[in-house]
Length: 321
Image (cartoon, rainbow, N blue to C red; front, side, top):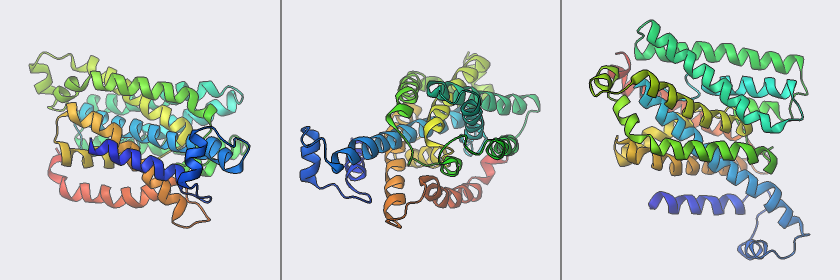
């Protein structure tokens, strides 16, 4: 309940504050549908509202995707950006923009395909060589580097492939529109619902492959299915928010501190806390150097980098297994 209250407060602050501050009185007028020709109304409807919804959707999707990948791979360091899933989604998104520039509805499925192929590649390589947990991470980093090079190659050959490509590379919400959210939002909502339905299976997988087998689980089938759901969530978020990093790493670990390790409570909590985290980070990115604005991905990198180092130092016994 407390997470929901905080999310509502964060959303109201995000809708209110920015280069132009919307007063409570103006907000009430907008909600009542008054003065639709005003500049404030247009800022709210075409900038603030899509951006706030985008922050909440992206945060929820990436946080849940991270929690799922950590359970499926039984690895505390795994997250969509660390193992290259975000880069796979980003590469597929930019490739789709080059090949089908007018078909915006293709971006979420294209991002999903890129994210899923990357997740599957990392998982398959890890199983083939019986890799340790740290080797899985290094494999993901290597694949992610290759895909990032592919993204940069597309940018070099097709510099006009998208407006705000620099913001896309670090993750940003400045160019989000209703159109870009329309299709991706459906994928995210469906993915979040399905992730809630498979919370028990995630708990079993997080025990390790041998334990899951002993409990009668078809590990390969469920790993494939859950990676697919995680890829849908990460891919859909990347399709409109760019390569946002560390949400899928920071939020699940933070949530587990408060609610424990049971995915039956972790997944719903990640939906709310992920939305809070990205919304607050986006608000900070807008206000910290106003009237100048940072891409929200830069704020997350400042937070996520030290957090990742802390994880390496505190969980080294677990990740070297």
